[in-house]
Image (cartoon, rainbow, N blue to C red; front, side, top):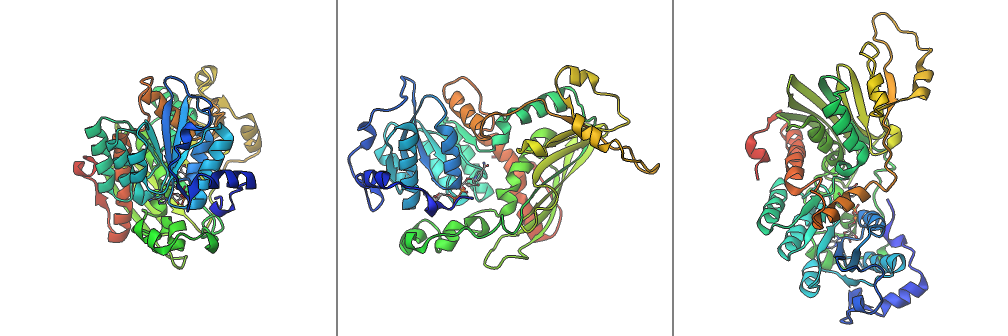
Amino acid sequence: MKDLENVNVSRRDFVKSSMVMSGGILLSTAPGKVFAQANPKNNAINVAIIGIGAQGRVLMESLAEIEGLNFKAVCDIWEPARKYGYNWLGRKTRQKVNVYEDVEDMLEKEKDLDAAIVATPDLWHAPHTNMCLKAGLDVYCEKMMARTVDEARSMVKTAQETGKLLQIGHQRRSNPRYIHAFEKLINEAKIAGRLTNANGQWNRSVAGSADIPYNPKLSIPKETLNKYGYADMYQFRNWRWFKELSGGPISDLGAHQIDIFNWYFQARPTSVMASGGADYFAKREWYDNVMVIYEYPQPEGAARAFYQVLTTTSAGGGYYEQFMGDQGSIKMSENPSLSKIYREDASPDWDQWVNMNYVKRSEAYNASKESTTVDSRETAPLVGYDLPIVLNKPPHMPHLENFFSAMRGEAKLNCDALHAFESEAAIFKVNDAVEQKRTIEFTDADFAV
Ligand SMILES: NC(=O)c1ccc[n+]([C@@H]2O[C@H](COP(=O)([O-])OP(=O)(O)OC[C@H]3O[C@@H](n4cnc5c(N)ncnc54)[C@H](O)[C@@H]3O)[C@@H](O)[C@H]2O)c1
């Protein structure tokens, strides 16, 4: 993850930006109207970006490539982040945004916003999203929807009451590789046969889970930090590990894979059991390792899904979701090199699916396993295939494009608030299961708004 204070602000940009900022806050010069806009069209969408941290910047990279957006404002409580947003968008899009510390202030002053991108820490998702929806904006809000299930519920209700669009940032739902695997392989071809199990993980080394540093010279004053819910700069930068600010690694990382369990099984889980602990890191509150088992109802019987998030080892091959059936299995990851489709050797061949370009044979994989001798008590090695679909854009871009297409009435949201809530309700329960050391049975009320 990129260190925010290492942002490369050139001297020229800094001088330019300091002309419109005082103490990091915009003076009243309405700079949005000073420069010619690069791409305003009649139907341009006026966008504000809230939270210019690591993910806000990743999203900006995609946003800047999407046609027809008019960047009007960035909002962040940290001055280096505001400067980054102002300078980066200026350089990349030649659009000059207004900068704000506070979302309420921004909404009061910016009267022609159409959409907000919310990429603040989880504790702020519900307040920011609800404020924006009530101000008449459509919202793209990052996952997890919120810090608590009730806050997430409030977001669905506000979207329903205001009639505005709310897309949640589970970007795999718009990834053509994931859509192909779901629609063609699972739904249509039923290529893996009866799905009996799933297995997913996000394993990250100690180095990958290290504290996010900050330069004390760029600290936010304590009273400002406290006003926004952070005890100090350490907590502000490492909010993911604190119970008042986030749901911890199982919600931060597990959100990605458990969402796919719910999507591909086309079902809500009936129960969850889990074990975890804050065993390794000092100063951190949340469980640094969690192992979870869900039960999902399937047409031919229950399927069990195991998930683990580990933050002290990258063993086991990174992050993926694997769906296992009696004829084969589908291993998906946002990282294409970790994805693979397997056929059980004894299953009927998949020639028709190869001919229809649903899968392609993985010659290199199959050649490499040919020398394996099989013990009579074991089954033969799986036969490997690859997905024929390639995503040739950054992984978040199709999801953002889907959001703006929905705003223009050209598409339906791929992950609207209600669907995201039904999926995330299952994730929120994991920490309860760890704490209570028991299996929790889900009821309809858990998924109801
Ligand atoms: N979809 C994905 O693949 C993905 C990946 C990473 C992060 N995320 C999500 O993005 C969100 C942000 O994560 P991050 O890694 O960028 O965190 P971060 O700490 O790097 O950035 C958060 C930014 O929000 C600002 N901020 C904090 N409180 C604020 C407030 N009240 N008002 C305005 N600005 C405020 C901070 O100053 C910071 O610049 C999280 O919800 C995270 O789960 C999603």
